[in-house]
Amino acid sequence: MFNPQLLRSFSALIEAGSFTRAADKLGITQAAVSQHIRQLEQQTGPLILRGKRTLELTPQGNALRDYCQELEQADKRLQNRLEDKDKAGGEISVICPSSIGLRIYPLLLNLQQQRPELTIRLRVSPNHSVIAEVLAGRYELGLVTQQPDDTRLTAHKFTEEPLELVLPAGCTANSWQDLQALGFISHPDGHAMATRLLSRRFPGNPGMQSIRVSGFINHIGLIPEPVSRRLGFTVLPRYARLAFPRQALLQVDNHPVNVVDTLWLTHRAEWPITQRAEQALAWLRQHLSDDINAPLTISSAIYR
Image (cartoon, rainbow, N blue to C red):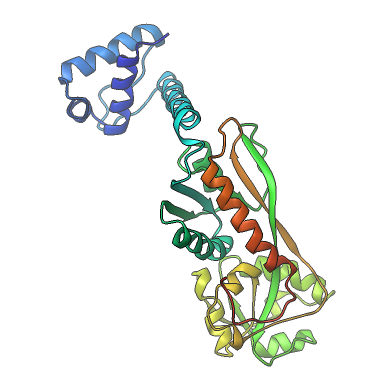
């Protein structure tokens, strides 16, 4: 067993990056912090590389850092079980990819308007960041497009999101030539998404390289904007399209070809979900089911 006071000094040293700042943070002397680290090193071996301008941990130091983080998470889990699980108010923390984030954030705000005792904290991030943040305990809930294989996480199917061929209002895409005439509004995942969908929609097509790029934007909420101005077509996840405020200026290709991604809800396996999070998930499922069952037509009522 490690002395908790020694571990606090070690954690403070990692967080602060120097003995002086760690001492200030703990309200003790620098000599005391140094002594605590030496006492730990008598049990573990060298923890830090001395003589470096910036703090650098040895393999033993990395192992002890992970141990300290696990203790911190264990304390949080205990607090949740003892105090927070049945608490109706408080924070709902979610991390997810940007497309589904565009859809669920307004829905969660609608819930907060009905229940002001809630606080919504949402961050959009790619899959690997979602998993890392949930594992670190910084977010209670995560949504990812690939089922995690980490045994520390629980994952369940949450909803589905089809890819859509999005055209300017009044346009059709009956042939590859129609798309070539329009031009492609690209985005960071644009060519990959377009290839996945259009290879099924137009089998044997000559590939995206045969279509001129008529625009590029890396903000997912703005991708439909040039399409609405008749500057080209794009391929997007449905929730990204639904978030665009001027739906009447868009047309979704209604050909019965489906490329659908599953969104997985993930959280720490050993960490009970709070009651408020369970209620928020039920709220989201209720409203997202309307999106799944809705036909591919444009509606002016985006958020309920």
